[in-house]
Image (cartoon, rainbow, N blue to C red; front, side, top):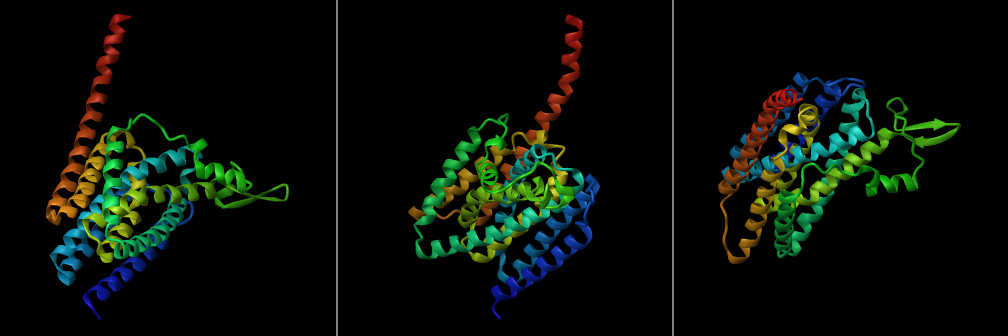
Length: 321
């Protein structure tokens, strides 16, 4: 067996064991995930991803390993932005907390399935038409600039979401959650519950994010091993991140700018390769880590200052009145 085949086999075994652990111990029906449990779950997935990074370094060399960890960190940061949309979806459909874990798990497994399809198509396209990477680069630069300039106070209009409107048009839907089931019967007629709609919305939302993130991973490394493993590990950690961040979405208001700068950098990295300018992988890793950490720290500082200023503002108002 080649080193790549051994690595894929190891990754597959890790994936099966981790999912069995997740399904068997962490996803029991009706289980509510506390912040403490979410921290442990997040640590579990991050530790697993880093253990795989160590294995890659030993088995495949430092360049592949650094490419993997760069791609993983970028996907992980994009996942945080993805989670804020998940929070809006759960709030819009008034999903009960007892169903969060199962709904997220099914939605994320569907997202992994679709990502594998997209990655396979992308690898095939890049092999046949290398110039498509430059199109990916231009798309990433445009997306990054648009994301940087986007207003943070705009909420997603889920009522007019295309997927939701399509589901309402083609399927009989009910706003009831069916007691945790995907379908229910009302007056003898079969209806699809709100939980079914949420699962579909989670999977399709991730598809939209994947259209940006997968080309970005190709910019870091076109190696199938890096693209597949970094994507899947990042997506598997989405569920625990959701529970960790669902009460603190407002504390990451400026993370979007950090992600936008990363996308612009990755897009430029793709485009300059046309002029035979190659940016080393450790530079990409440094830029990704710096942008994400800086934007998170800045967001938290801004949020804390806003909280500290509220009592003062209230006191001024009382004095005026």
